Image 1 (cartoon, rainbow, N blue to C red):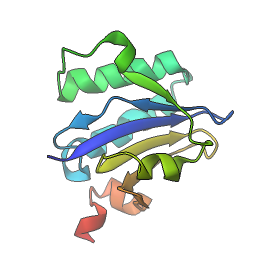
Image 2: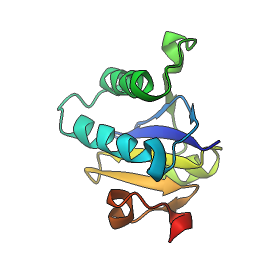
Image 3: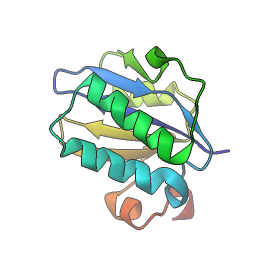
Length: 129
């Protein structure tokens, strides 16, 4: 079972983390959709914790349909000295889908290795290179 987690990094360094999704979160599965969900969110102009929570709930409704998550467990505040790599390294998700507003781009990690943009759009994970 391939797990995935979403992250939002705001310009002030605040990091929000979604609940972890279990199953098919690799690029060839739901991962490409996760990437495009974040791209659409980036362009929405609603880059807030509440907007991020809405995005996570929409992704859930479309792909996983978890119905037993408390409202306050969709998105968590995280602070690891604003160090994304450290945060990802301390999580158990196979894939991390990150909207980094400091760089104004979506980044995808397979464990702690960033996947090149060309692989993301072609739906190829690091392990398939």
